[in-house]
Amino acid sequence: MKVKPVRPGLEKRALVIRLRKIKGQIEGIEKMVEADADCSDVLMQVVSARQALKSFSEKVLESHMRTCLEGATSRPEGRHNLRSLLTVLERYAV
Picture 1 (cartoon, rainbow, N blue to C red):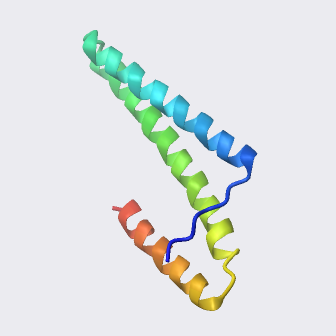
Picture 2 (spheres, rainbow, N blue to C red):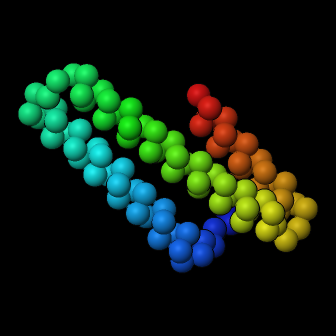
């Protein structure tokens, strides 16, 4: 039973803005590679993009814990949501 997250409009908007910035970073890295930019410069941009993606995932994780775990309407639903979160975290940590 998947629970569809309900994100307030401002929270969703902030996540979309973060993703667009990350997309821009990735596109910038692509252009740098196409232009044969210095490897150190490319790698610094990769580090920045990875950090931005990590920050994005932490925000989504926080939101998930708030809406899906705290907002569970029953113990079985809460246990299911917790198991789902643990599965994701196991993959995330690898």
